[in-house]
Length: 301
Figure (tube, rainbow, N blue to C red):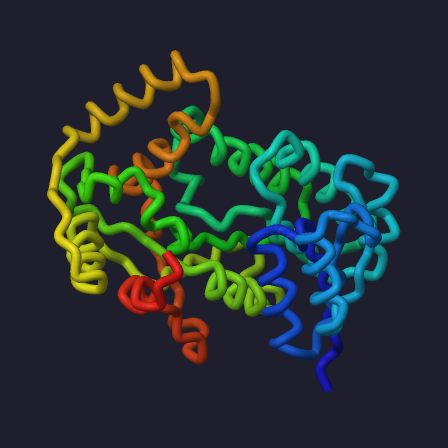
């Protein structure tokens, strides 16, 4: 009989974190600890998620990544820490605290909160949010902890929110030639791959790269039109160099990150700079990830 693994999920009430907890429990033979700041959270949405995770079999553990002393009991006896902490002021310092305590408590593997394009290939400054992931990954490498990265391109749930789509005016707009392949995966499938990665010995100090689908911008437009029956007007916005110049100018005048960060994500994709080069879906043939056509046909976008 295989030894039961104990996995702690940080950021367990987030969009992806809740799904990772669920996927780990579905996989079975895993003791899952869902870490929350307060088990008595009064936020109705968080309360609902906490109750659902508990009902499914997760142990609800209190811990705050910005208070390292609370992480000591949370990480005690844990084999793998999975971070699903979102983009905020705690992304870097909170995960560094988690790495420190995980190492101190003898955790065997750490999966940082990446779930993105291959940010390792990007330069600092290419994407403000992914800069945080680069910094955490460098710290993780220096820590000596065994790690696994999970890279899935962009989440399909955000397709129609991408700068490619201006659905209000029925316009499909793109930078570059529209022929660069883009990697896309649903959050559900990403969570299922994470559940496999926690116990895969072949992923020690490696990245698991997965994609539910890989389409060019123009193929994405055609797929959207085919599913919805709508016709979008195609509009070229310029070259990749012109896109970079646009982002630089917008960033200089922006009052908030939201004004340009989505274009930074698109740059990483349409430039090909963040492309996943070693997609490993075949490692887990029992997972049949959803394609863009299937996802859009569901009507969730």
